[in-house]
Image (cartoon, rainbow, N blue to C red):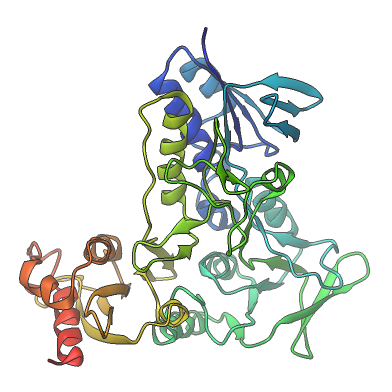
Length: 450
């Protein structure tokens, strides 16, 4: 008898799990439930959709009709899962009850909105779904002043898009730097300065205290000062959506996300839960850099987890999901910023004594036209000399270089190992003869001393 697989959630993790299950076992029946009205799209593209740089239809990979006709996967959109009975192995959604042999929970995360006055006023938005993006786009037609709460990468990308639309943009951030937690302040300050040159205003070290207005927002108060606006957008970070896991009594970790085994099965009172798998932003991961918990709420992580969860939902040949370094990259204005592993702030949380190496150069040979800035910072544990993280600011080609450094960190390379074993491909249109990454690690070795 064909297995019945139910997936809750239609993001990168959920749809990858559904497709993987069907590929692994073409005879199984796969059903997806989602509260969203759009599926299989990249939330990262929403700022460009708002700006009009990308059409909304272009950022949707596939429609429910495609999944049903081409892959045999039934997708129920705008359908809330009301309950899950893991003993009876049933899901109740849209008033109907469905049985499953295996269940994948990929409910993702929610934008954290601080519990402050006025957060529910008109023209106050979060930015998570295409529906959110379309609502923001419509409200912007009659708005000139926009306040963005939060200076993470999504908040900054959104600020750039809104400024390109001719809006007056103010970003309010409670921390003392943009891209907090995952970027070091010296690297983040350069990005902030770049955006200030574009006319984007920043208010730092200022928690938002209230959103003001009668029916619609008219201003935002932060650190005792008022900032007028006709549109306010919260880009204040993602929290794991734990409604279903908590209802089922699953174990929650120290980072307020779901504890899982390498098979991506959750635990209940310390025991592995059979026939249920989880993937995406609600999962607490293990760090590949230092022993301990970390979050990896990235599209690349979601796809990787979705593949493991989908395979394990139908196969006795289990795949495992390993520790993560969480490499990331963002294009903010004319600059790319990327990172991997631990930042100085995260390393401090682990109690690591950090040594840094830095170098600057160009993305191409000095004599080849079109070369752009390239700044590389590499971090190492002073005691073990192991590379634990890196950050890059570049005019181009940051991704390949941060992936290179990710491999070094994940494989436990010391700074000296890196210099001995690493090589860079050289061609004048693509790099200097000695890549800036190599120069940064040379500086790191010098600062580590003997």
